[in-house]
Image 1: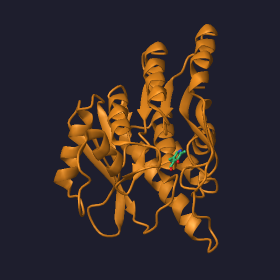
Image 2: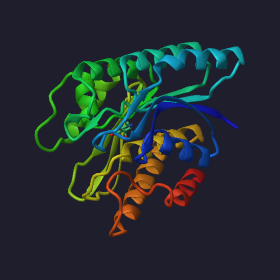
Image 3: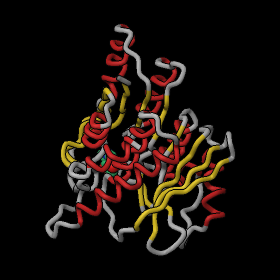
Length: 278
Ligand code: PXL
């Protein structure tokens, strides 16, 4: 069985980060080790959340793993709370390096043109450097432009802009960049990807659902990483992740009293497993 390591926070309530990654990756048949970087009472969309920074524990935890010769086939990082945590991730990438590994970075930092509470433009630029050490990154438009130090575009983004943005993202140093939340026509939404080594530009679109929930980026990233680790090529992994995310949202809004803070990725799991088998 492949062993992967997911590095991100635990938001105790809120259906995001590790409470999404762990069940999704385990269901995909991956042994999933976790490195919790902080513990929050809820994700930062709830007013008054508590935040326990675990940065000071990271060195000892990873030293122990090295001592026990524990190795990983892939890394998936998400929300990181501090610049020191980003530096630890870079160190972990270096110290646990092995041929054939996949370094998957979701620079989870913001949405809808704004960074989440607690993040600054300088932090976003620092996250851009971490993306340079990844094999694949999956920002949304907000995260992409903040990492590049560019203005958030007014109005809809056309294909030409998305292609050039993806090339600039690969300029950070990662061979493959995926942009999430892309739409070129009404009613359709999905992702666009660029592989700077082959020059291949690809897209995958599904039904656009006119709602917005926290944690959908984490559902997408977890499923995309799962697909790649289970041997899917990028196009198939993007399809798996988009369709699983859309189904999770569809199920959420099918309940009139659904919660506002996360999506029902749990009951959509059978679709994920079906898509992963293809
Ligand atoms: O879903 C991304 C995420 C992860 N972790 C924390 C968050 C968010 C989004 O708001 O607040 C703590």
